[in-house]
Image (cartoon, rainbow, N blue to C red):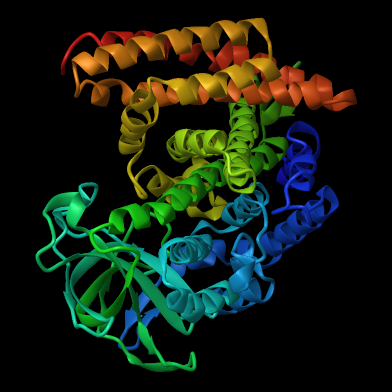
Length: 555
C-alpha cells in the first residue's frame, strides 16, 4: 500500500482539509499542494534515513557508559538530518521557532516516520510533547530559554512520571521538591521507564518531572511539575555544568530496543516550576494527551509496516495450487482474508487519527468548545483502539510469513515486539477505556458522544450504519444510568465499549472514503467496505451483547 497516496486522498478528497485551513487565520498559509510536498519529503526521509537503521538499531540497542546513554550506530547522524529538515518543529509555536503546521498534517508525517523506525521516532515524540507543555504552562523565561532549542532539535525533552511503586496511580509518587527560595527547586527521587531519559543525539535533555512540594496535599492534588535540565543553562543560552541528574540503568526490553528506556535519579537536581504549584498533573496532561494521540499513530504505523511487508512477501511466495497451477500465496483465500483485514484496519485507522487531529486543529483555530470536547472524547479511542488493531495487524502479518515471520531475517518479528509496548505505555489501554467511559461519556450524560455521532450520520446516512449508531447511543444512555447507580462497574465493560466505538467510527470513515472515491478506486474501496461489513463489523454486535451483560453484575 502506498501510505503516501492514502494520505493525499484523505487530505484532498475525504476531509478536504485545505478548505478548513483556508477558512482559518491560524492555518491559512497551508494548501493541499504544500501538504503534498511536506508528506513527500517525510516519506523520502523515512525511507532513506530511518528505515535503513531500524533493524540494526534493534540488534545493537542502546548502551549505558560513564558519560551517559549511547544510541545505536547511525542514530546521531539521523537525528542531525531530522533536525536540519525542520521535523521537530512541525507543529510548534511560531513565536518560538515552530512552524505552526496543522496537527492533521503532522500526524500523517508522524505515521511515515513511525512506519520506518518506531524507536527513533519516540525521541522526537517526547520532545515535541515536552515543548507543547512548556509552551502551554511555562513562564515566559522558560519558554524563551528552552523552546527555540527544542524546536531546533539541539535539545530534546522527556517526561518523568513513573516510579517503581507508582505507575498508573501517580498519586502515590514520592519524588520530592524543595523550594530553594530563588525560583529554583531541589528535586530528589527516582523515576523509571523514562523513554529517551538520556541519549547522545542532542546537547541537552530537558526533563519534565512530577514531584511533591514539602507540605503539599496528599494524592493527586499535591503534585507539581518541574523542568529539570541535564545540563544547567547559562543566562546567554549556553550550557553550564551538569545537573545532579544521572541514569541508573537502561531497561532490557521485549522491543523498541533502540529507544533508551531509563531509570533516572535526581539527587538534589536543580529544577524550575512549570505552571502552578500542586497543579502539575493538569499541566502534564497537556503533554500526555499529545503523546496518546502520537502513540495511537505508532500503533497504526506498525500495522501499516507489517501489511506492506506481508503484501510484498505474499505476492512472491509460491505455495500450493490455484486452478491446478503453482500460485503465489496471495491468491489463496485465507491469505486474502488476512491481507484484507490488515488493509481495512489501516485505512480506517488512519482516517480516525487524522480526524481526531483535525478536531484539535478546529478547537484552536475556531476556539470551539465542541471540537475540543470531541478531540478529548476521541483521544483515548485513538490511543487504545489504534494500538490494539495495529498489534493485531502485526501478528496477522507475521502469520502471512509463516515460519519466516518468526525468524529475524524478514523483520516481521521485530514489528510484533515493537508494537506491543504501544498498548501499555502512556496509560494502559484498559485505563484509556475507563477514561472514555467515566470522564468522556458519563460525565456529560453522553452529550459529546451523541453530537459526534449525529454529525457522522449527516455525513454518511447509510441505513446499516444508522441502525448501528442508534443502537450504540441507546446502549450508552443505558450505561450512563446504570453506572450512576452502580459506580465501579465501568471497569468490567469499558474495553468492550471503547472497541465498539472504535469499530463504529471505522465504519463511518470507510463509508466516507467510498463516497469520496472515483473511477477504479471506487470499486476497490467498495470491496473493502463490503469485507468490513461482512467479516469485521459483526464484532460490534458481539461487543454490545458483552457490554449489556457486564453492566448487570459486579465482578
